[in-house]
Image (cartoon, rainbow, N blue to C red; front, side):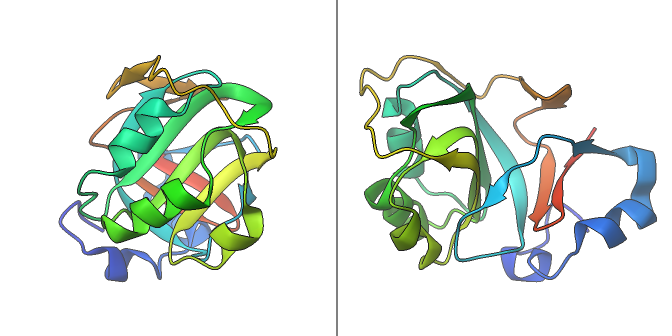
Length: 165
C-alpha cells in the first residue's frame, strides 16, 4: 500500500495481514486503544499533535482539509478531560479526515460511533478540556515506545495500530 493510495482502498487493509506482509518495516503500537468511531478500519498519512488536557489545536487542525490523513494526538495518556467530542469529530468528517488516534480521552461516544470516521482513544470522559491551544503540531510523538512522525503511513483496525518506521 503506497502513500498515494486513496482512503477507500486503505480501509480494507487488515493490520495482521499487513504485518505478515511487511514485518519489521512497521512498528506495532502495543498500547490497547478502544475503537470508538464509525469506521473500524482506517489509514492514511499521519499528522501529529502533542497536547495535555487542551484540545484547541485538535479543533483547529481538524477544521482544515484532511485529505484522507489520520491525526495522531499524544495527550499524554490522560483520561482527565476529553480531547475530542462530537462537534470536533463532525468537523473532521466534513473536512475529509480518515481518522483520529488519541492517546487520551474523547467524549460523546455514541454520536462519534455513528460518524464515518475512524477513532481510536483510550476511553472517554464527559469533562471538557482547556481551549488555550497549548501544545505542538507536526512534531514526533512517542506512544508506548513507538515514534510516530508526521508524513508516515498509519493503519488502524480492531486488532491495533501499525506505523511505518
